[in-house]
Image (tube, rainbow, N blue to C red; front, side):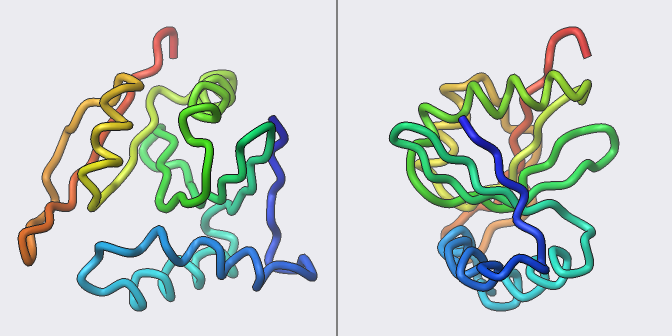
Amino acid sequence: MYFRLIRPSAPDFLAHLDQIKPAFAGSDTPKAEFDEVKSMVRAKEVSFYLLTGKGVKLWFISRVQDGRYHIIAMTGRGLGEAASHIIERVAACGYAAITYHTYRKGMRRILDKFGFKQVEQVREFNGTQETVHQLDIEGA
């Protein structure tokens, strides 16, 4: 797996930024959330990555928050293949846990498969739940 840090100064930055937009589907304010995260990427308050490998092409935006590695947004294909690589990389950096917000039932099932536990229901709107999931990393 290859992790590429996408910097705001990269010539293809805007093209990559367009790829992360679907991650905000399901929000009641997807444009506002995307614009906020885009501002955070430009201000270098968060990191923006492209993870590639055989059958994998994932864009994700993350930051460290309270000693945990927090994934803000993720989209693409191959999460099942890539998850263990992401978890290993985060563990190697010494973080105590990985957290992830989601609006999607399918993503909740995927997170559960990798050992994440729902730790919070942030809110509910129009029959959709926004939840936070956490995977504690052993030895951290």
